[in-house]
Length: 382
Image (cartoon, rainbow, N blue to C red):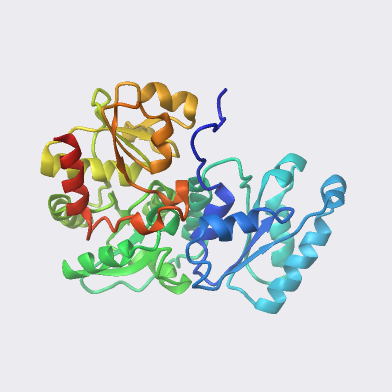
């Protein structure tokens, strides 16, 4: 049966992706639900929850609210909280129950804005899609509504990093390592969407010479900024000495040519070495391994990806198992082991979106720890 997970985990849902993307930006995020999704979010999907405050609320729908469609009760609660907290914005997202009763989130957001004077936005998330949907919707909203029209231009080279969330990168320090690398190569990082940055910095994003898309979730926002400001983007999650060098050279060229570049590996569908994971991260890892070791890799993406990337989209066990039949080496989150061939060798690459906190201490900083990753994979191959 399709869309059934009997042996493996499922990915963080779109509503949690929405909350995670906006977590540090001073807004108020509301889950429209009956009090289940908030515990899933803070217990399993958000590693910053115990160390950093964020205004994430739930409407606590009752059965009668759902049956009668009583939106006014939720609106009053949202308005009261917003008037008390005075957030920079309000984001209202959905879960399965609002989806089933046809809740109009845009209309609710308009009412909240009218009553509070605070910008409010509705998101048709429903808990049935992966986190990438929620993150991309949130970042696109920011690009359309909070990046100012005439930002002050910077002296020297500047960039934004788009697609940073702990759902993909955890809190291992990768975002800090990437910023240090960019600064060491003469780039001012205006904003990092959205870890270690604030809404005012995101507002200045239009001043950048080039944008860096480190995960698929950042691509819709990068396209909006390309349309609004003509800012080119480079799709890459830098790691490894050779790829990092090519990455910096590509940033310089893109800044001058104003052309967008996908600096990730082409897919080798015939390879018996397989990576399962998020498309930009997996494609960057595959390219770094090919550049330094001459390894061709098949890339399977269980979450959203671009058709032009050429990666194999497989969303569930029914689609994944046949694709892994001839695999000799699998690089993936450990929770994928049960559906891999018994004779295949396995390299653990935990992904917070898939296994949560189970292996959080083993999630790598791809810049600092790439050499260890490479050495361990080569040891498995040889």
